[in-house]
Length: 98
Image 1 (spheres, one colour):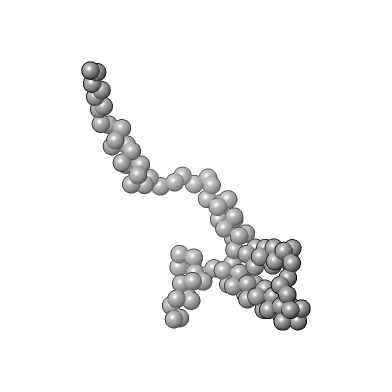
Image 2: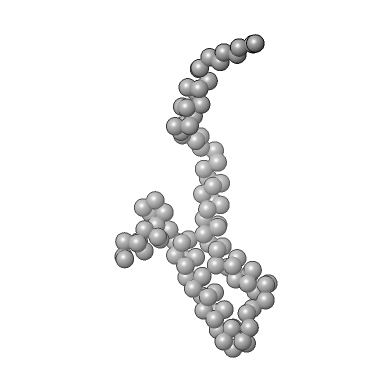
């Protein structure tokens, strides 16, 4: 069980503070919604739900955007698909006319 949570809060083996902050803010939002539901006997409106969703995912989204922005100038490593496309390009194509 501990290994599952350790892996869930790591990003490729390195600790991820954004995932921990996202988990904490998600739990906080859920507790807030439960509190509102019990005291008002109705669900919060759409604006509150959208704001809560933004709060809960902001840390993780900011981390992912930063990572994507930092990696945009690095070349992509060649993949197996690139090799297959290059091999297929070397195959001669014969078209028969009837």
